[in-house]
Length: 312
Image (tube, rainbow, N blue to C red; front, side, top):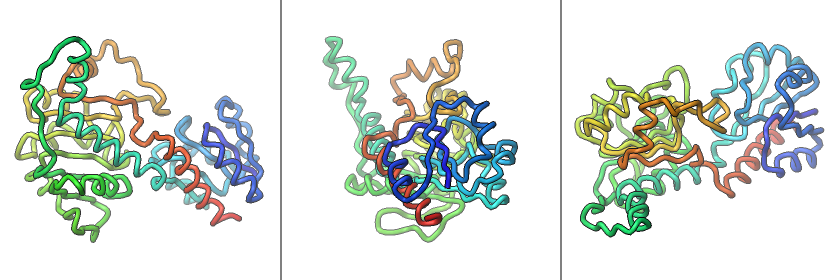
């Protein structure tokens, strides 16, 4: 089977596929126009987020039998249409679940203990102890929306902190155990001190966290988003930060990211983005929650295992 790599990946993916008998063309810089011209030659495609595999492109891929997404989210693939054409779609959320769980926990600790603020102040000659008095995770209720690989990994990391972890997943049930209590959405609104988002981006979740959603929380809360930027409406988040309804936010992803996630759109004249950048209540990172040395290998390994299992 001929496989086209149209994004950069960890070398082990190509090496293992070739060892299993696949014929791989590694062309991560191939212009989109040439991808369109050549896509009908391949039975497999390996992709991250560079382009969208929509209905028009999939119709040109006459021989295509599978798409492998190196990562968790599948929003850049028309999965329903692909499956209707008999094309199997693989992803590898198992590969970066540990990285995302650790990153979410690290952001929460930094937010609670004002580590970014304190670090900057000490480097600038300020020694402010009372002003940087922090909070403890112990005893807080952490609400999780979306209890798949990422939500489960975050729960595992919270275990040693003696937090009360509750979780809601519209499409999953029966996951409650000694570490997490399965609840309805209303309980998330009522009890959460911290809300962590672990949902995919879809028509259903786009701007899910807006003013109406935020207003349903019974008490002020902290927000962590390591999922997708467009799950949160930034203007409504900023408004809630200003009123104190949201006490702080840890954002690894932003509404303003380009579809490739490699950069953000022009933000210099965007007052909401400027507020986030300047706010001491906010911690930002550039979509790197799942971006570790280890996850780079694991993402490729899990994906390769799935492809080989079905097509060798």
